[in-house]
Length: 328
Image (cartoon, rainbow, N blue to C red):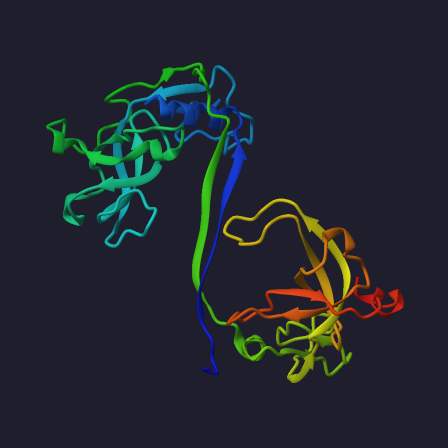
């Protein structure tokens, strides 16, 4: 096994949020092929709309503030994306562009479909290409495309209001969108460093290593290269476990996606013998209602798994509360 470990790591989850009156109207409008902005007391038209005036912090979005703008506009700045990533608006190379829609005073960031960077320029007249299936999300705008590619007015740098004046809109639509779910995803290469690499290498051999703080002498598992209490660097490796004591626990009744474990199950803090910091682990081999504080357990590895699959009772008498109260 190499001394320096690296591994690809992806953290992703669906982020669901409720919508206030401004974003609710904006996203529902996109579903209906209508672009809404808000007009500030000073007369500026903000697209996309915001809940509060960026100049005065005054709340916006009452019935008199919404305006409708046309689906055409002007590129104010752009950057070419030669290699789109999965999940981006277009699968072929495209430009990220800030587009100021006609009648608006601010720009909207979105993808601009173009055959190459030679076809994109500041001042380019563009229009919205609507998605065929719209749900009430920013992706209802599939992308922008050049007007001149469709035989429309190709003139650049149109003055504000030359094409259309924003029209008042009440912001009301049938069956409004009330929530959105956006996938959050972060992919990166993780390098665990010296302390965790040594810990992972030991786990591959079904051993559990911690590190002892030279100041307070506590053994930290899993090690991080420094004592969380003293902030002192740690280098002395100490083997702990594989037996330990349940300090606290909970019964899980909601099944996690892609986790091949049936509910209910018990997830616990376990103070391994010789360690001064409890770690997490699943308890198996015992009914959920028999798991208790002080239960003595041991690590169980399955096959080639690097981490213990679960912890099971050892059959020993329960540990006295005094022996683990400091690890709660």
